[in-house]
Image (cartoon, rainbow, N blue to C red):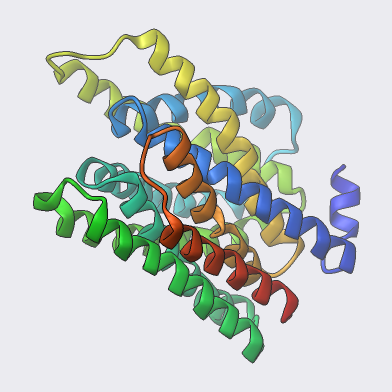
Length: 300
């Protein structure tokens, strides 16, 4: 598998595989966000998820994949720091605002700065048509957020805080997308990066969640929380792993933009499972997001 993946980097086959991985990551990232925002406190859920994927990744990191090259330890330290800040901001945003408001703002802010970062770091360039696609996609994402803010939000007293934190979280989405793309390209075996990343990345949030759980007057039962963490851990492997691999096989900017079709999936999940309203206007805005992604793909 590793040899085949390395052989298709930068090829048309690699482009098609990266496209499929980015769309898969979009769907699974929306599922991941709904898991974190859903039944339990977002901090507790994130802690349970991180605990699960840390435990699951450890045997692969320690005994299966090749050990990281010496220069990778500094890269892992940077990734660890960026992701800790991102996860804290994401959990904080979810405690302040509705899922269908916070999620589109986070995901809408991320790709624009990721495209800029890909230009500065990897010298990737978008065509005029692709920039049009980015504009269409962002119009749909932010239009969806504005619609949700006007018609759906009950947490009016925390709305401004939620939006501010969501924008800041989006900046860190762009930062980790670009940085992780650099990291997974810096090692010979991409699975070395993925296994060690997940093991290291899961070391802190479980302790934060445990401290929060102990302070709760009506703390949830650990069984259902850990079960949600296990499902979230598997989802994280597939979602974050897919987008990281896509950025190694093909352009970082395109993968980042295509992943933001997750907003469409998030709205559908919010409607079906979280019982949040979806009407014709929101469907139209979701269509804009999908259309923008198609324009980016076809314009390359």
